[in-house]
Length: 444
Image (cartoon, rainbow, N blue to C red; front, side):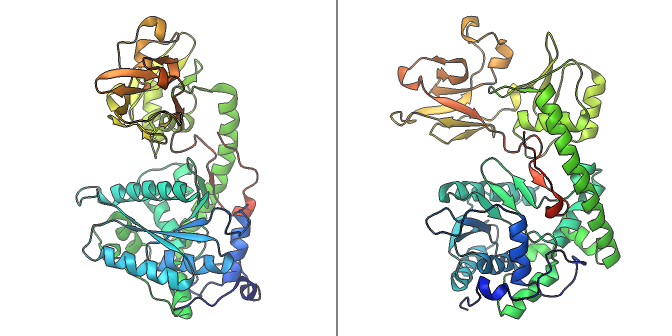
């Protein structure tokens, strides 16, 4: 089916960017979507000479409707279709989705995962692999923003799952309209639109989509939650919980950013310096996530137990170490990643990114922990314990550079650099509640 809609036509349709009922089943209008996108900006001009806006499209009803609505909003788009390779028919479904996108006027790029295997934790492993390949694809295409198709039902399911897990206000805020990752902004413009409304929108447009059978597997936690939330009243209550928690989270993020700026020192070596008094559990949890290169922080309850101990302990691959004038958070050596090939842009331990001078080839080099054995004069005043956690360049079994310490054994590696880039900012990375009430964002 060929795409025929235009943004100019959409502007003449009724607009309700703030629906009274996020669980209405009425088809959505392109005009409402365009209004929402304006609230979630700023955006690059719709110019083919500039990087496109990315779309994550699975081929299901939510993401395919996202692509259809986005095509009314702008032309300079690039859709990424991920084939997880976990079902025999997934490759054909992915190719079909690319064809449907092409017919819609949206260029599609197929991304195939080859390392996933079925087994325990497959949903989370698939999610992490999907986001990793999407982020890399955005990098290669120059996309600054990636639109995701999460909708209102996904949001209340997430909130209920976090309720059952004992999450605090941050977790109960649900998914953010905007989440800033390392070098791409995740945007979820459909969070106020129901799953059924999106499918009705596609039906009205005469478009077909793919249904993943795993979405009906009641052994999965999210599917179980979905079946328990059929009552409209329950979903509306959870929606309001998310709005209130989202507003509280935005306020807390601003306060935490101010505290971090005053009280915490972030070191380029990947550790954090604190004062003699440890911060509140939520802040300490976010700092542990940062130092550990984690996607999710440890629970505030676990961190509170760590605080109560008031001694050197390890949590989530991060050590709390007492110093002369306060505390340090440093990566646990035993939890660090193993060697990876060294090339510009390579990530190690989900925390550091390598930059090599253009004239230097990474051939024969690997990235691994510096380890013990550095002489005192080469450690820059830091203890051997801390320096052992630094990223280093190795040639076979010989350490040839530790850029953070300005130490190298090969002249060509003198300018090599590792940038500390944890996957998630410590705070202020998201927009929660209603986007138009977000106020000023703070990032640390």
